[in-house]
Length: 75
Figure 1: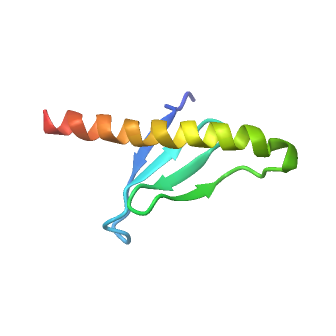
Figure 2 (figure 1 turned 90 degrees about the horizontal axis):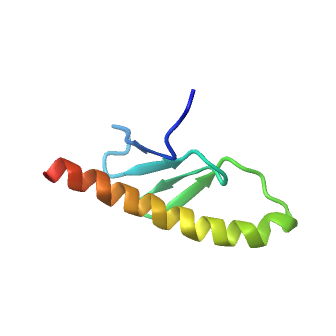
Figure 3 (figure 1 turned 120 degrees about the vertical axis):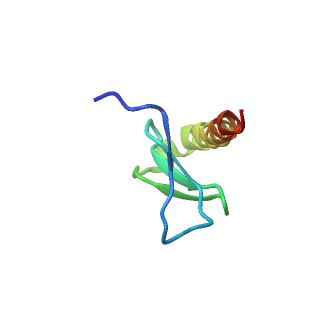
């Protein structure tokens, strides 16, 4: 199965939370309500530099993805 890079998620137990799931490395879920990130990867010290760069880009892309999806609903 091929997954999209980003998936939107919600849950009725957390009605104010807006989740974006990033399915590529580094895999994570970000809650856009509070910018909390939950990682699905284990990282070591060697990964730290790449992680910092990849994380910044991926979180920006996740936020842009959400904004784009919401704009489509407004059309």
